[in-house]
Image (cartoon, rainbow, N blue to C red; front, side, top):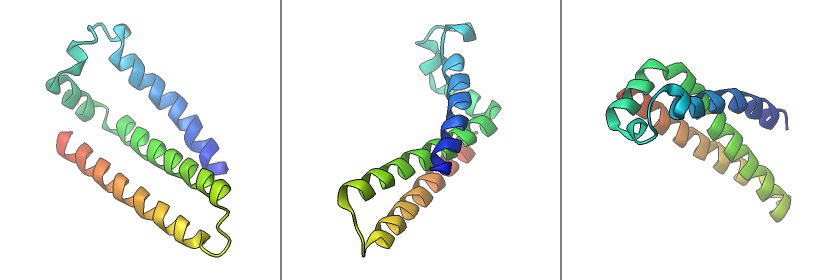
Length: 105
């Protein structure tokens, strides 16, 4: 549960920044923030914040899915398989997201 709480606290701050960046407080219309140039510019300029967003969201989300699956399925002998699957999915999506941040930024 500690992982869930820590990643949730990180997401509160990082998502607030992300929503402010996309909202009217940024001084641009919502439609203009959807352009490819604006998105890649933000990825390059705020790459650390978007990396934090990526890592916190992936870990928080998959840890929540793991907790739900453990409650629903009650796997006593195969809990290690569920944990291994979740860790593999976390690694895959973190690698894919990190690659995207490096290429776009």
